[in-house]
Length: 202
Image 1 (cartoon, rainbow, N blue to C red):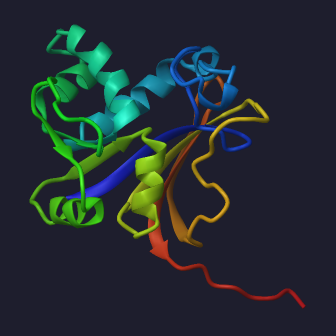
Image 2: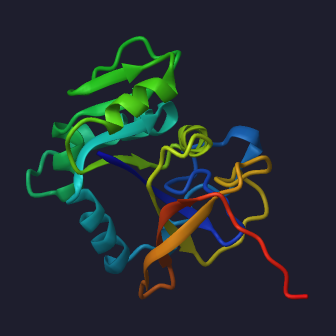
Image 3: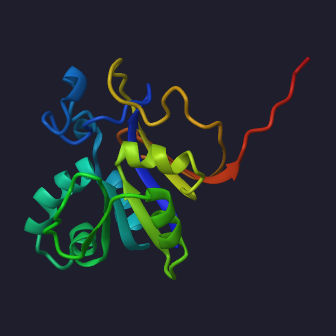
């Protein structure tokens, strides 16, 4: 399986608490729910397309807790997101979560890189990460994420946690697809290329 990451971010790179005011107030963050005014059918259609390719999920602890509190309540078998989240295998990366009650969940504790590398070797289409900033950063540092879908919302917040923070491993990507929604969200898909190359205009 290849690992894909789908991430919502602002123009200044913030990924914290996209879905609601109380989703993540850590660090005094007061801008939660910044994606909501820009969500439309175009955004939803892209997410549905992503979920059509999934065979398993890999989530960080905070994202897992948010998903597990909401999606099991959505029982419509025709819902493309809920049906897959509730029925497909889920792996949650956490050294503090002792028990996961959501059906089909396995906790990955120690040796994250080793265990995720083993999951990549399993047959299937996509092992998908949604949100899960800290987990994504850890895996990108080891070149374990193959494809990144970035949904960039036309808003600047000035504060908040970022996906590509200082100290990130220099990495080159190749653009494979792009589109813009009716409300101005740009969606870019990138495949991992490796290390950047450099030159000079002089």
